[in-house]
Length: 98
Image (cartoon, rainbow, N blue to C red):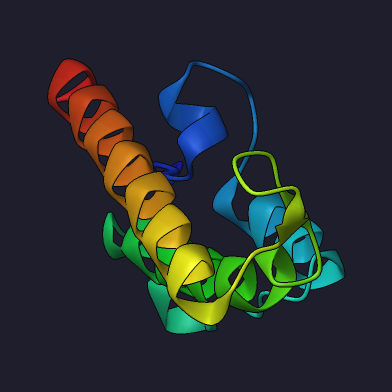
């Protein structure tokens, strides 16, 4: 019996297992615990990890609105907006796939 993959690429219809996703995300610095594989909660875990990375990473990027590096509060706001948008997209894909 094949397990259903819930990673965002699989939800988009790609032949991409949660195990492959786990390996690729490890290369990006997100270590997905084995117990989250093949469960819908895999996406929330990854989105939260990416949110935290975005807060740190954005502070090393220039904010196009100020032409200065993002401040901590600006980075947090931007990361929150990205997280909200991503979770909304995942929820939409989940509702289509069920």
